[in-house]
Every structure is written in C-alpha cells, then in structure tokens.
Length: 374
Picture 1 (cartoon, rainbow, N blue to C red):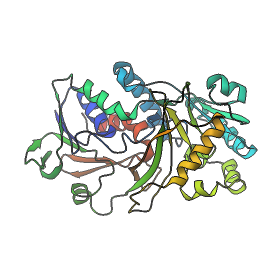
Picture 2 (picture 1 turned 135 degrees about the vertical axis):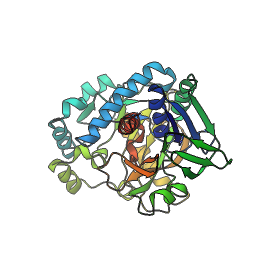
Picture 3 (picture 1 turned 180 degrees about the horizontal axis):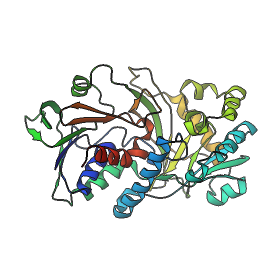
Picture 4 (picture 1 turned 60 degrees about the horizontal axis):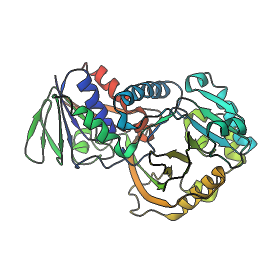
C-alpha cells in the first residue's frame, strides 16, 4: 500500500510512522524545509492529567503508551516520564484538587493529593508557599523543537519512506493523487492531509467554508538554564479552569469565589512549565480565539507568568531567552479529540486536535490507520 502524508508536523509524522510500521510505502510532503508550526511551539508535554473523561482520556492514555514505546527506540526524542505537580495555594483550589482525586478515573491518570513536603520530595525546586499539590503520575514530556527531526531520522532508516520538503500540495488530481507546486503528481492508495492550522487554500476547497475547526493563538517563553533540576512538569491553580477533567462544583466555587487576576483573565491564561534538556524552562501560556490575530506579542502575560513561577520556585526566574507566538487548530466542538473527514476520493483531512496535538498524535494516527484499514 502507498500512503501520501501532507504535513510535516507531529500529527502528520505520526501518520507516516504508523504507515511505515505497518509495512507501507510513504511519501511525506512538507511545504517548509521542516515543520515550523505548533508542533515545535509547544511544551512537549504528554499531558494526561487534564483530559476529559471518556474518549479524550482513553486517547491520551493510549498515546502516552505509544510515546513511551517510540521513546525507547528514538532516544533523541528525550522522552521522560516526569509526572506533573499542580501546587494549590488556597482552600478553593484545594477543593478542586480533592474533587479530581475523587474521580472514578483518578487511578488511571495516576492522581494523588500530596502534602507540601511530599511534593518537594518529588520536586525540590518548588520552594514557594503552597498548601498541597495534585500529582499526576502519567504525564510525561519530550523535546518539541527537535522531536520531528528525531522521528524523521528514524523514519529514514526505512527504504519505504521518502520526505519531500519545500513543496506545497495544490490540487487533488484523482483518487489518491495530489499535485504539488513543483508540478509533480504523487499517487497513492490513501492521502492524509495533516496540515495543522493551515486551513485555507486546498483545505478550504476540499472541506468547504464551514469546516468545524478554528485557530487558537498562544504566547510562550523559554528561559536560560535554571541551574538545578525541575523533575516534574508544573501547573498552577489556573489550569483547573482550562482543562475539562477539573469540571466540578468545586471548580464553580473557585470561578465565582476566586477570580483570576485581570491579566490572566484577559488573556485566558494558565501556567504550564517544563524543563528542557538544556535546563531551560518552557513557560506558558495564553489563549486568543478572535481571528485575525494580532501580529505582535504583548508583555503583560509574560510579566504575570514570571510572577507566578517565581512564587512557586521561591527564587528569581533565569533570563528569558526566547519569546514566541504560535497558532494551532482546534475543533469548535472541543469535546472532539480531532476532526477526521474524507474530503475526496482516497483523501482524508485530519486536523483540529487543539492543545492535545503533541499529547494525542500517536493515538490519533493509530485510529486513522485502523479506520482506513492500513
């Protein structure tokens, strides 16, 4: 079987991975020299803790299993089973954490409510003041800026894999056939369009103007090396407001009784923080839904995040090395893990995982492969 994958980000690359693993021939086409979108501009988190119960959690858990297996083969992915800690600093936040550990699926996530001493035993860098911490054992991390390169290096070991960068697919010319902007036609038994937040052009022509997917913009930053390990990923109490796993009466009480600071509310913010292989910290993020997006980043969210992190670490933050904005595609029905649609004979569009793309991409690709009978 021949498969053409359009898109070099993590969702596209995992589709190529699945096809190669199943013995098929794969041509992967990327319009840039390498992916430069949301697949690189994220935390590199395999984030199980906040996922909605049911299909979303099942997808994340399966993806976590697949990531660990791939990480065992591809050391340069930097896969590590970090787990995560969400320190809570008020009784209202504590109540949300208690509701989370009372969930029927808490054990599957590896939830535990820890005392400050227990949390610091796992992550001694958390020297700030907090009254408890929600631990999620199943969370993990990879290195987002180099993950695609590492996966591609492994894929190239197969004689059945071809990567064609610097080409934009312009047209579907027949069943399972696409033409790129070099004039070359690529024929296959199946084409997967994993184009991320690129929703115009050919995608709009094939899927129509009412594609149930929107773009979301975020701001993030990365520091110089911390100078000490940050063994777990770290979130803050505002992450409870953002992730569906924490929906409860306790969350309602938090939202009404403890409003977010003005900057955090205006930019729909939470704290997520992961240490990179070089010791720096990736910190974010904001959420902007009103398209078209501004072209510049604004400083107030960075100032807010710096204060939150310094309070949790009990020390100054290292120098900020990078600041950036990213855009990802999200299903407008956010309960859906991904939008998967046949848009032409032999051609499927797979997009819209939202902030779940890095986490769920191996399982999303596995599901596509199973459904298409690869």
